[in-house]
Image (cartoon, rainbow, N blue to C red; front, side):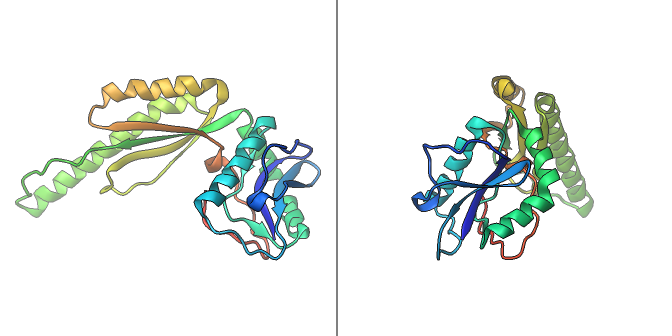
Length: 229
């Protein structure tokens, strides 16, 4: 089994202070412009998403980010042969090359807004009253989401907003691709939004590798995926 951690530019140095799953050394399978970073595990199935394995996967990606842009590969991606990896690199070379250019010098920050449980209100007396209350609640929810995003989007290179159920206490959840020199300003902006929205609890997480901004690996025969980071 060849277990893949990330896509980098061809020729990027491999970190010497971390190893792959089960202590196996890191290797690179390169095309002309990009490379897949992996470790070899003879006669082993794809790993299970235990805390230890997921943390190891994350450590490898973070170590790779010290020397250049990285596209993280989701946890559990494995191939049976190097030829399978070559096929993926060939099919995805343009998308991966563009993706590496896009995330260079950037990290991912997460922003989440949680609303407290609403106080109980008198039940609607009619179906029309119930629908009007629901429409007003949904309108207020969308306006709050749009206002939060509008305040943060100018500080980011790109963003991905998560679709949430109207019944969820998580009002807003998004990932932002932020340049390294803008991380402090982005976090400060989140802090500044807090007093303006006392009805919400805002949380900024990261920096993380740019998981939400990495192209999906093209399907390949015998590729295995177990869980996600």
